[in-house]
Length: 291
Ligand code: G1P
Image 1: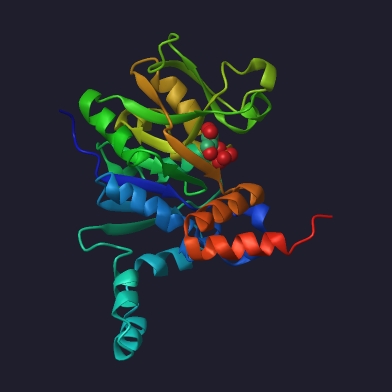
Image 2: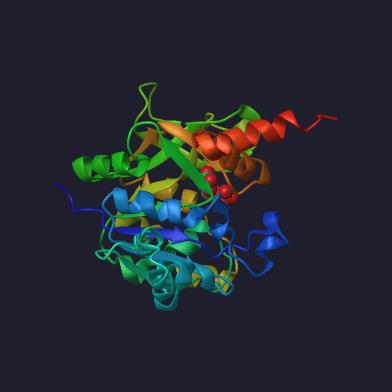
């Protein structure tokens, strides 16, 4: 057995330009699926996979994330006076008592690799998860991250979640090349390849369980000095020279909430699961002429 995966990193420093104007002063990770923000779904996934330290790599204009995971005593008292005990529980359950939240700044937008490198001193030599809250995952069979953590703990090898995407979309993702046709371990990963150069259509989605060895290939200082972005994918490709990496196919539905269309689909799909909302959507559709 290897070391337990207790820490999860959430890179949340991005500007969210695709959602302007709402993201001018508001974190894109706080966009709600009806009443729950994307970042809370991500945190719940980490907690149900056994993580107890949530590390948010943040930037200015992200204070709402810190407030969301903190207690709000005035609101609690207000709700208690009105006997709204269910709501008190709802807000207090966001951060269970055994979970700690830590915030660290990413001073410049220098890529996902750089965001992860910012958390290095907090992670030290432990394995850790990375969760991109933009990728909302509804797993068919338990939690996607929990399966990845279990695999790491059995093997000590880094794990990333992959999903087959349409060929024309490969250039939006890190794309893996499997070692052989029996899917599992990979021999390469390329960040956003041209369609004609992509090694496959298996794309990395926003879930990683990583060995701390990856830090050997992420140097925050070098990036700050050069001002160049550093991709996590490139560090993983270098790690492959000395360590194995497993690509686990996603068993569930992923919504790319970094795009307006993916975000809208996530809201509609989630609402359709709730009988009360389902009726509202179906009736709104009936009354909306398609022009
Ligand atoms: C990032 C990663 C990419 C990965 C993707 C998953 O890209 O760099 O390798 O496939 O997340 O969502 P981004 O979407 O931040 O451009």
